[in-house]
Amino acid sequence: MMPVWKLFGMSLLLLCTSNLAVAQESLKKDSVDNKIFESIIKSASTLNITLGPSHSPSKRKLNDIQSNAKFLQDLFASTGESQLPPVYAQSLSLDAKILVRLVKETRDRKYHKSEVYADVQNVAVDLSIKVAHIKYSRGGAIKNIQVVVHTKRADQEVTGYEVWYVPKGWASEQSAFIRFDRVSSPTSMDLAPGNYFIWLQSGQTKTSRLPVKLGGDGKSRRDIDLIVP
Image (cartoon, rainbow, N blue to C red; front, side, top):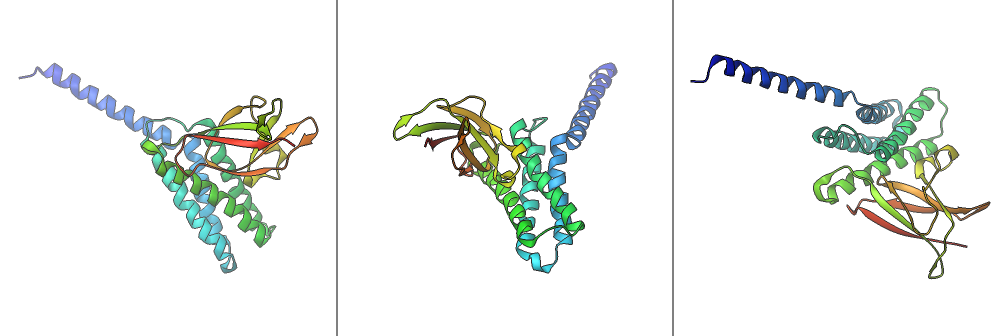
């Protein structure tokens, strides 16, 4: 028979381990990243209530947003990670900000039907790409994609160009424009799956924006050729 003191020690260890697991799960539920998911879901739900019957196309997209955000939230909760990859979290945060803004605009009656649908559509597509990417990837994890950009004129690589990108939903907000860390060519950055515009800049010269859908196929790397004028 095991001594009483050993039984007590084992019980105490199990209790501490259990309490630690509960505490870690509680911290995760209160994490900044989890609050991003909560914000997306709450805003989409609010918009679904406040938008009238004439907004039925937007309301269908809002249902998709809630479903996909919940899928991502549940997947994040099931992992042992304490936080999302920072670039991924930033991408989701931009989606959340669009919806928060829409909630305010609809309450203040300062919106146009077509603009509401465009914004809701951008968020819905972004989240659907993220979910599809997970479902098609090995292991089904929340991961970024390595984006490698080659700047070319004809078949020759041309160096010295800055590569810029912006999530499609933020195309009109210059503050959301982000430059790749290094000039081309090639140059690479890790980006979250989603919809983007990517373009080149050298001094005052800018190329037209190339719409790029990143992800949805489960691949961990994407090579993109941008044409130098």
